[in-house]
Image 1 (cartoon, rainbow, N blue to C red):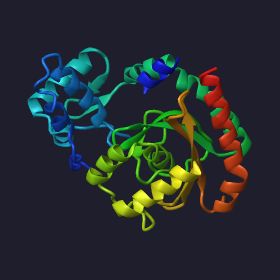
Image 2 (cartoon, rainbow, N blue to C red; image 1 turned 180 degrees about the horizontal axis):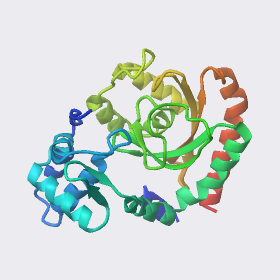
Image 3 (spheres, one colour; image 1 turned 135 degrees about the vertical axis):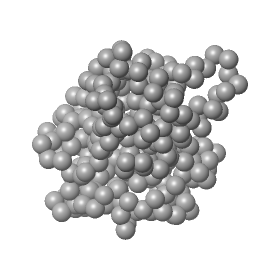
Image 4 (cartoon, rainbow, N blue to C red; image 1 turned 90 degrees about the vertical axis):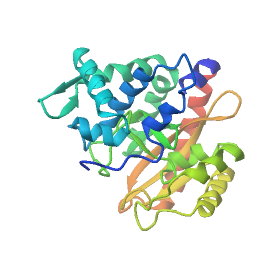
Length: 280
């Protein structure tokens, strides 16, 4: 079980610092690496909630993959039923969800976590989430939502958010060894999402050290104004952090004191019970 869990784990918006094309190029010397498959996956990932319809030029700009290659990837996705086009723009079809479902239905982590998230959401009347670290982002792998949408960004399963300004991200970053954390801090762009966002590497490092010592984290309106969240770690059998659980609240409704006094004990108990179940 332990090995299985470890394995599981703008019209022309500017490309991210390490573009998909550059990451793919890094594997150029590997004879077994399939560049065409990597490009196809990058094209799929170029679509976002606010950019559901993209042109070939837009996808090429976002990924830095040549337009001709983007066109071939889209042609293949259309033929396989994963995408469609109106002749100018392209969009994904629901069949893409089967790719994520294959992971969610095969990993015990997401499946086992769902009842705990549902129970926490019922007790606290707030949205509860689980995420893992994926590059510089957190990747949502399970969620128990409420009818209220707290912020404008996508928080559904499969959604990604920057690790540095999210409570789950800080839990996961604080669990990294010093060398890996140092590498992260040396290249990550700490962009201010609100006036409260920590944007200094040394300040973030000190914050992560505090999280490491106390074993939980509150992020107060650093991702978006009005959003306050608290997160705790989920451990594997060897005591290493495997994932993070969090509860997202509206700052005007739930204060920091309530998060620590009422929310935190419930979340720590859920984390402990989930960790025990995974490795029992």
